[in-house]
Length: 191
Ligand SMILES: [Ca+2]
Ligand SMILES: [Ca+2]
View (cartoon, rainbow, N blue to C red):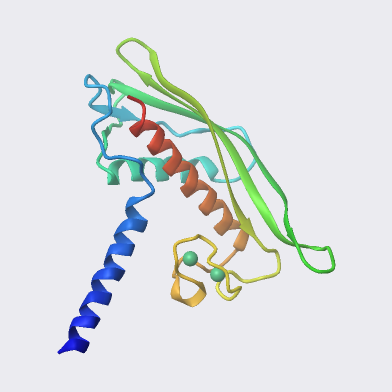
């Protein structure tokens, strides 16, 4: 009887932690968007770098996050109430951590973007901001067995279906996810 209750309490506690983790990425819920703006169009971001497929991935992630959070409708129309234009300005790979022999053990993929959210009715800028983020990776370790939580979601290696394949690719996805969250937060905190 007591054991059963204990188990249930642990279950509830775990559930609350998951709720907190998934909820804390955003500062607030919808309600701060200017009243005249009912939808937003998000054209493919301009990729000024030579990194392959980056703007498709980033733009899709932002659309997905905005739709998922139910903040504002995403529209494909040219006549949308507002538009978010973005440019991927730069990406870079640099040393991040060193081992005992002072050799690089982890690298950092960094990206920088500019995004402008425009009210179509008067061409007013609702925000114009720079965003940057990064993800780390090791060259010789397989992300599915490196003992690291590569994407910071609390699941490690075999326990995480996202941790496989090319570790730099994974670092890029981590950087994209972070920037998408920052942009959604910028939309939420505009007013
Ligand atoms: Ca993980
Ligand atoms: Ca891992």
